[in-house]
Image (cartoon, rainbow, N blue to C red):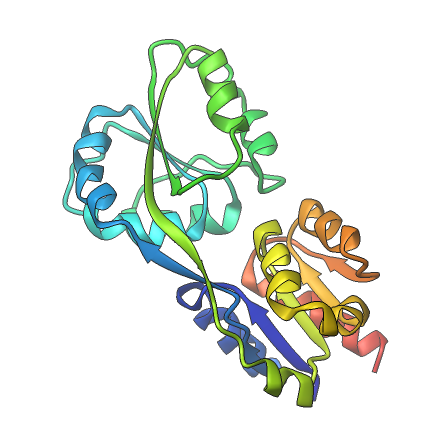
Length: 243
């Protein structure tokens, strides 16, 4: 039974862990990053959202943190937007609304390619995210005429993996879903584990994540769609071909 670790914040890992276990994997969580709410920013979110025409959620964590503060608002006149398909499905289920998102790709570039966002003149856009992040989306929407504001409602904190347990039984594969988590993995693991990490199999949802892993020296990387079911299916196919 292959051992697969999920390197996501805890709040986003439960369903993926369940699917992995149902598929016959020995699944575990690798807590490289934790999400910490920013109470003042979250308290200001409803007023910011009320003033916006479009709400853009850049990650599952943004949805998890923001939605409890937004669910009582009347958002019927506002466009809901997500960067990726999996996040859009999550937000659509919570809101009961159609959510604009790229049909292919799960990054800012794919979102910006949508014709619905080609002309943003007169639109007030609120980007809901954690502190920091890529500037491309805001820059491009501003260049297209939008007035862009941010709701940075959470911080990313270092997790505390059980590295001795990792050393005793290294996994057969790790699911890594963002470039930030790649950096966390190699930084928190320390130099003594670099060779082990470079030899592992990684399952990722985007070419940019694969590129970050390759830059760290990893050579066994498979890329799937971003949905949890696609990540699990990709791993099942891999281990069927490489028993």
